[in-house]
Image 1 (tube, rainbow, N blue to C red):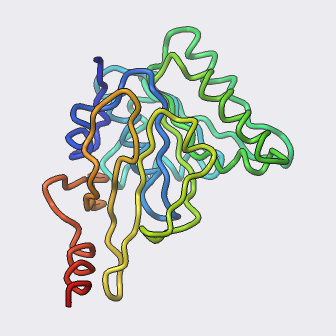
Image 2: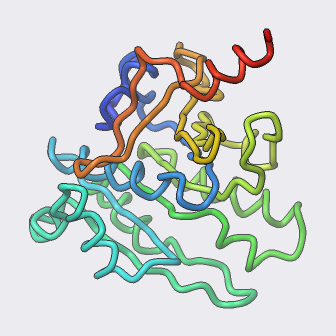
Image 3: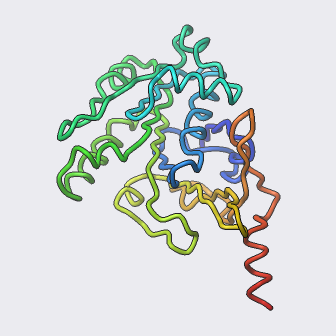
Length: 235
């Protein structure tokens, strides 16, 4: 099986080598959980080894995105000049579906290996019902069959015990969740691979940190918040 590394320290270990080539991966989490950072690292890692990638955003200004990436040790501009990273801003207009003409054109020309859609939430603004939403997501995934495709989506519920499956969870080959677990008066960031169709992976919950070099997963550690919860449950 051909696996492509995500470029996120620790995550490839959880995935036992990386992501299955040309699969579709959904990264879910609440606001501020680190979804965009993970997606940027994914595109950046591909560019570093010569794999062109497209990053589509509907919510962030491209200059702000570049500046944010730079604070995390990722200089996107250098790879943009080399045509290894393409940043695409797709504004959301009410009842007007997002256009994926730019990445599709690059894919057809064989110039793109990785694509990120940040985020799927934009489709909610342009569809009237759940069936239309599922249809648009399926169409998007089908159009991305020739690349390693990653999309992000907002998680409405933040607690570990409150998570539930939504329509898009069933449509993607893989689902990675970023969660915040309450630890006394603050939160601990954690990650787990909910599914990765067609490949083996570790299934536990692992802590991660956001550093000046991006997101770092700690696969050999147990979340302190979960250890504390278990200890309190035994008392």
